[in-house]
Image (tube, rainbow, N blue to C red; front, side, top):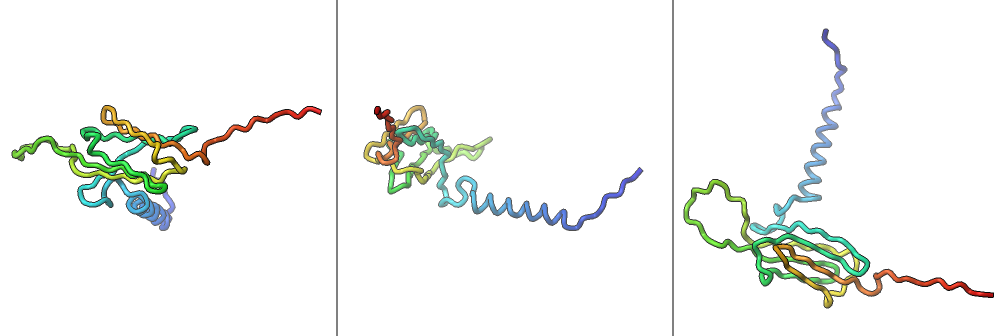
Length: 151
């Protein structure tokens, strides 16, 4: 037995519009890694979290020497940049797979609170860069003790 389905001409247009909105949002509002960056430049994936005293930023940059990484803070913008260099040049073109990328990378982040750049610490261990950025004194939480007043 066949069943009839009511034809709704705008049902497909709505899904097409949603698809186009999603396409533009993913392409221009939240671009994927690297396609808007300069040719050959890649961006870094970072983890950023806040403690009572600092902002902590972690990023994985394996294969990079600590001296090849440049970290700077200008105003409320943190910038991490560097370059991944190829260890050897293979003259043969018989690659089965080639997925590792070489070249420059750069990532700029807006910090959520003011920090003291002069007291910032950067540690590099096992390919993980950890930045500890102390919060400025005016944004650190203050505890005020409440005293009972006797009569």
